[in-house]
View (tube, rainbow, N blue to C red):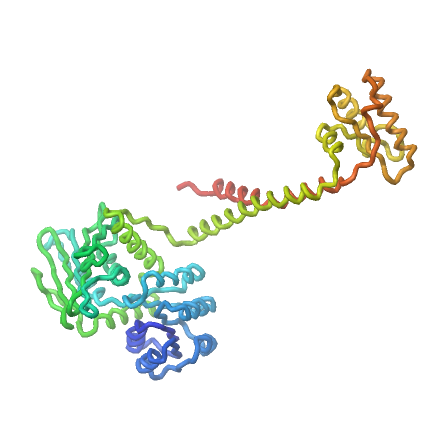
Length: 478
C-alpha cells in the first residue's frame, strides 16, 4: 500500500515508524506545516519525497491512503481535499491533539463514510488485549470490575489536571476500555482537589445494567506510569507500567506480556497492518461513540450525577434526517418571508378599486365571458349567474358591475347593461338601474399574478409535507 503523510502534530511520527516496519507499506510523499516536524518525518521515511505544499502531494504520484495527524486548519483542509479526491484517510488519535477540534474530521467522514479510519496511538491497548485473552474465568471468576490509573508528567511542578488534558487522554484510553467493556451505558465523572476549578485527580466511571464496572483515573506526577487491574469474583490480574518497564503486580497464574520497549509503536503497527489487510475492526463511528462518552462525562461533572450516554447513530439514515430537518427549516423560512413579501407587494401594487373589490367578493360582477361573442345575449352560465345575483339582492347589496369591453362599440356595452337591468326588473327588483353599472375592469392580471405568487410561496411547503407523508407511509414496520 502506498502512503502519503500530512501532519501538523508529532503524532505522525510513530505512524510513519510503524509504516516503515510494515513490509507492505511504501511511503511516497511527506508534507508538514512545520519545517522541524517535516525534518523529523523525513528521518522516519528517508526514501519519501518531501513536498513544499499539500497540493503537490495531492497532484503527485498516486497513493492508496494518506496518513494524517493534527487538527490545524491547513491539515483539515488538506485532508478534506484528499478525501474528495478519493483517497483513504488514516487519522492518528493521540493525546497531543485537541479532543474537541479532533471531531472536525467527522464532517469529512460524513462526506466520505468509507474513507476515514482512526488509528489509536495507545500504550495500553496491546496489554489490555493480552490480559483479555489471558483472563481465565475458571480461576478468577466472572470479570466484574476494571480499574485503570494513569499518571502523566506534570508541567512546571503543577499537579493540576486541566479539563482539556483529561478529555484528550480519556478519548485515547476509552478506545481500548470499550474493547474490554463494550456494554457501558452510563457515565459519572468526578474531579477532586483542594480547589473546585483546579482538580489534581479526575475519575470517570462507566457502568450499565449488563456492563462491567469500569473506573478510569488520571493524575499528574513526577513521571509517567499506569496501572491496569482486571478484577474477577475470585481474584484479579494487575499490571503496572513504570519507567519503561511492564510488570505483573498480581496474578494467580503465569501471563505472557507484550514487549514493553515501545508499546505505542507495536500497537500502531498492528493497527496499520490490519488496515492494510482490510481487517480493521474500527471505523469513524467508533470515534463518534467515544466522543459521546466524553461529552456525557463533562455534563456529568456539571450535574454531579451519573448520566446515560445517548448514542446518535452516525449513518446515512441520520444524515438524511439532518438534511430533511435543514430542508424543512429552509422551507418554513421561505414560506414565512414569502407571505410577508407577497402581501406587502400586493397591497402596494393592487390596481383594482374599492367598488370592484366589494362587488367581486360578493360575486356581483358579470363578465364578458357570460355574454355571447359580439352579442348582447347572455349565455346559459350568464343567465344562471344573473338569477343567482337576483336571489341574493337586498338593500345593502353592492353594485352589480357589467364588464364593458374596451375595444368594442359602446352600443354593445349599453345593450348588455340594458339587458341585465331588464332581467332584474322582470324579477321584481326595484330600481335596478341605480345599482347596475357598466364599466371596464382594470387590473384583472393582478389576480392571476397573486395566484401564481401564492403557488410559488406554498409549493415548497406542500412538497416537503408530501415527502414526509410518503416517508411515513413507506417506512417498514420495526
